[in-house]
Length: 439
Image (tube, rainbow, N blue to C red; front, side, top):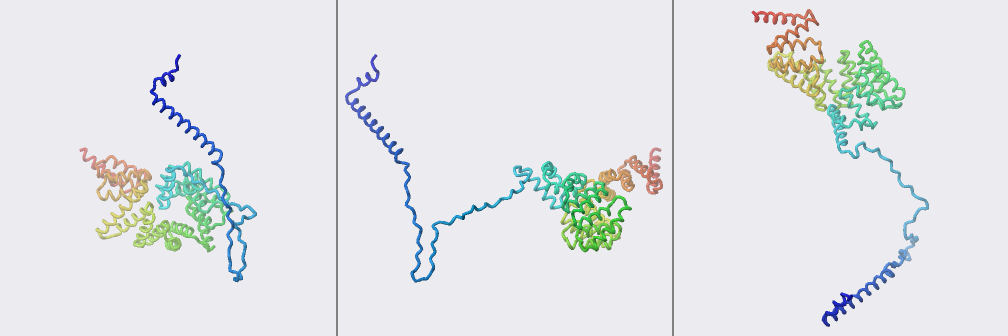
């Protein structure tokens, strides 16, 4: 069989055959040159080029200078020992290094706590509580927030691990003691402080013990706080906290003048502590220095606007002035101010029983009986046998036309206090009216 390529070339013209031969020769020469170039590169292309050695620089000095010439080394001398590298201490790993949401909640928790908004700090803390409980330093912060947010039992559970250590920081021990007191375990709080004082000689622990005894639910035991406070005060190691606690203790005994002295000392030492300022305002209120009390209450609330107790005390101040005033315009203005203060109280503590009662009282006087009933029912839920609350509820219901509810509350009052003349008179009046209406 004939070769197809041979047949192809046989049919070409002579000039075409000549052209193809030339192209073939050219490609053959190019291939040979390429191979030769590759060989030379592989053989000689990677030979390193030696650089000339640099001679050390010579320092010329004038011949007549008389200066001593030193031979300087060409390069810095290397010590004959190995320098130890500076040790880097391992920093404590942040609990939320890789969790943006966790970092945000922790930051907001701390920010709110620093601004005394413990209610909001608590809300953010609950979002990261599992991580908090795994970090001792966060447990201490969280325990304080729980105590200030009105959750002492939870505070005890959180702080108990840190508080059980042999050596405990003073502020942690004090938080634990007051958390136990607020949880109803006053005797346990006293024993706890006695134990911690064996390894901690901070005299604030002694003052805290006196403060706990001074708030003991057993009134007979409260007298035991006085000698401890006096012993502390004689030690000349008084602290603002101790002055504050002693001022509170004296106020509870009705000694408002001496209470004011110690509270003023506490405020002088820490002029921006809202607790001290507000308590001094209470002393001024009981001493009938109403204008001083108002200034102090407002100053405390500028620092801590979330203190519902101070809002309540400010409301009581205004209501007291209104009750003692002979000017109708002043009565109206001060009563309005009192209502606003009480509303701020329930804004920060919606279940505050006395604030809700006073709001109901004022609303009843303003003819807003349906609104008054809402607040009075909250108060009664917290104080179920309070006669004053039930009297206001009876009055509100009779004004709204619900005589059955009104009589029911009056009947309950008379069961508690059969000799209550106001309730008996109102009860008889309503029953008489109902009989007349039936006729």
